[in-house]
Image 1 (cartoon, rainbow, N blue to C red):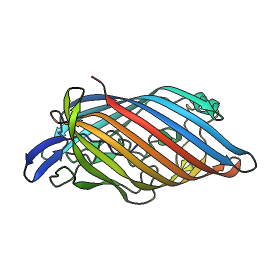
Image 2: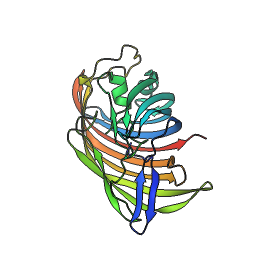
Image 3: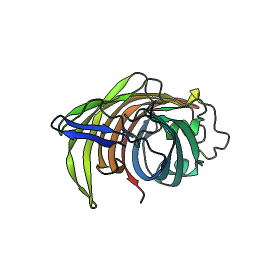
Image 4: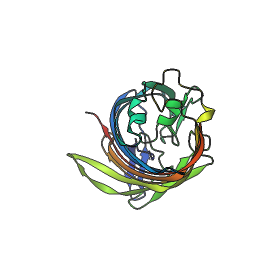
Length: 274
């Protein structure tokens, strides 16, 4: 999922708004729902289609705030609550058991995160595949103050689970509105990113069961991202985000050795629980 914003408005005036994530100890819980419509073209077999809907919970816990260093410790807990699937690959998707897992890292007032990904197993790497495990939850803020219509780069660092080189999406402060009684900033994030993920670089998940457990594949392609984020002006927290990602690529499977064409359209929402 593309970068989502957690920030506070520190300064407002003729020069614009300085958007910053307020470092504060506490816990935020988000409900996530995503729908992935996949189409795979298999040589000598034909097209197979699968639709997967996931309901997940993300818990973000902030502690150890150091204002001098402008950092806070961040613990991310991801739980897949429910998986529903229809189509040719439904059994593989629903039979795969996904245990909750925890990642630790840091975050600063610009929303820049760093996580220890060295202990990810194959199942976890697939679940957090993106520019950052916090993608869709924490957004990189512009260093300079911005006005409505201004843009800034959302950076995707090389070495994340899915990206082969440093890249960037484009964020725009598009306006403000009322959302369920709250005054929010509206931010869009759009762009295209190259994708390159090889699950063989991660150790097998010893707890994984089902037809899709520890699947060895090398996925390459490109993802078109279009997301909208609604951020509460008063608290600086994301109240809701909406995203659509279109992926086209090729997947090389190790067993049996075969290359398939993959097209996927994923839509999703993330909502802060009250």
